Image 1 (cartoon, rainbow, N blue to C red):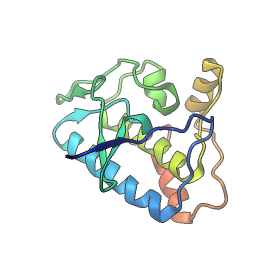
Image 2 (cartoon, one colour):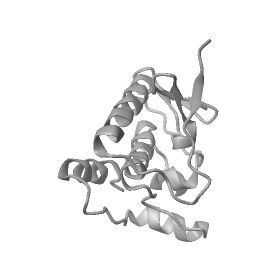
Image 3 (cartoon, one colour):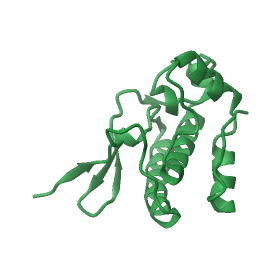
Length: 159
């Protein structure tokens, strides 16, 4: 009998902070899954820890494609969807977007959460949260390696 395990945020307001080696293993699998989706012209649009499942060997599986969309050449998306803390600036602003870039942004938020144990953009007041996301201002803890810092900065680029 095969089991599937759900990787959920703990009930407390904090997230689990992983060592870089452990985070790398999970994150590489997440990126491989996202790359597979994009190669097949599917954008997820709601990537977050709650939508990442682990099998019995701790392999990551992407779940909940309810907000996903099929990409078409030359067509842009505008729908504001997904979980606010993981949503890209163009999504929460209601701007047109091609698709894959919003998944890259969400992956950047996930990587930050895996390595830091917190979210880069967080606020109980949604208007404040959106302002933080749109400004792209967040603090990267000094304990992260230069490689991790650089990758997060590249993924959470508001341009």
